[in-house]
Image 1 (tube, rainbow, N blue to C red):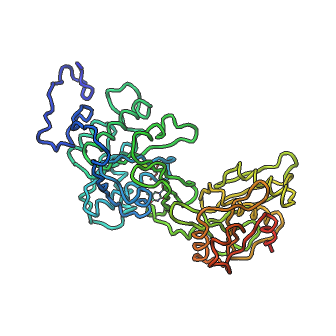
Image 2: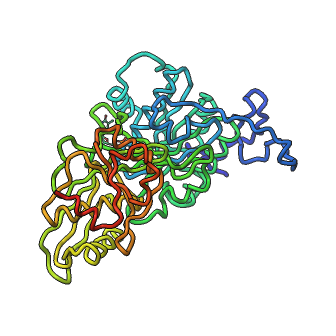
Image 3: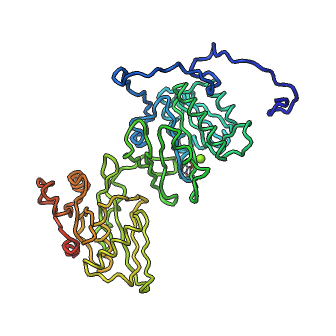
Amino acid sequence: MGKCPECGAWDALEQFSHEGTEAEPGWAAGADGDSSPREVARPLVEIEASAVDRLPTGLSELDRCLGGGMVAGSATLVGGDPGIGKSTLLLQAMARLAQSGTRVLYATSEESAQQVRMRAERVLPEHGAGRENLFLLAESSLARILEQARKVKPAAMVIDSIQMVWRHDLDSAPGSVAQLRRCALELVQLAKSSGCAVTIIGHVTKEGDLAGPKLLEHMVDVVLNFEGDRHHAHRIVRAVKNRFGSTHEIGLFEMTGAGLAEVDEGAFVAPGSQGRPGLVVFPTLAGSRCILAEVQALTATGFLGSAKRRSSGIDSARLTMLVAVLEKHAGLRLADQDVYAAVAGGLRIIEPAADLAVCVAVAGSMLGRSLAPGVALVGEVGLAGEIRAVPALPQRVAEALRRGCNSVVIPATQASAVKDRASCTIGVANLDAAIALLG
Ligand code: TYD
Ligand code: MG
């Protein structure tokens, strides 16, 4: 290069070779060179299974999704809609790490250092403790971010966000596919060579994911999705991919005036909402735990032939199918009724075990009748109107009873699985039997 891309001076560049002697080996520049020790193929039994080195963030809901904490030398991608709270979550996690004496770097390419500082004042009430371990860098040039990382040598670092980070030597604009790929690859290599836990934040767009983090998912070790309705306080962190743990766990947060707060699982059922037509309680499985969800349905007069079926938090194709089953096997005339179904609190339910709850909520709204307060429902509904078995029934029943329900409607075929709680369960074999419970 004859001209310096930084200052514009001509012939100002000097060649030098990096020996990497004074720097720690892992942090040496030029990760794209082949500096790693040569590996040889070995039999599986000869390879020691070392435990992964984890950095628990202290935000237990986040650690749960990560499988116990960030892993040293790993790359994590956090995706989510703009404004959902990604920056807040990672800033809080980094501050917690700093508090426990870990050196961390938060590189922001979207905001100024002052903006981040202002947010930090809001979300980190405790002053003093560990602040000297939290390094902040407002920079969008990848080369300079890497240079600072090599200087600071953090145990964990965050890039917020990858869409705005760029390499000067690539022709394309920040956020383009070429930039995203190269920058992410370099950050992943830095994580691997230095043992730093690197977290990359990315936006997802509603329409496509061409320039979104989908492109990067195969490069990183862990992919977390930050979901939730921006107009709802509840936020859910879901692990989509995890090379160091299970992908079944979810973390529950609530956006408050002072940042994200961890949520108690009981928060998704409004007290006093039970016993109304169209509202039912369903114990849903989320990883290793069970959350009580409130399923709501409403039927309203529509037009025959163009009646609407709308859902939020429930698969709409599944709702349409369940409405058809109700028509055919429960004798409800829904062809000229608009049917709406939703899950309260911004939760999303994908398991078929919610079918019975949806059906009874729709039937309840249609008939103007409700279940007795304190009754939860669980069961899959088949196309013949039969109630089918669900996974983890004993756990669901136990959780519903623990959280204040007094009886649970279950598939009749599974009654033997919860024999010890026979007095609190009601087995139903088909939809008619379940709808007959509406008082
Ligand atoms: P932010 O973390 O900036 O979202 P992202 O990085 O995903 O784009 O925060 C998103 C919203 O959260 C912001 O619009 C305001 C709100 N918020 C609060 O309600 N309370 C708070 O303490 C903070 C920091 C943000
Ligand atoms: Mg942000």
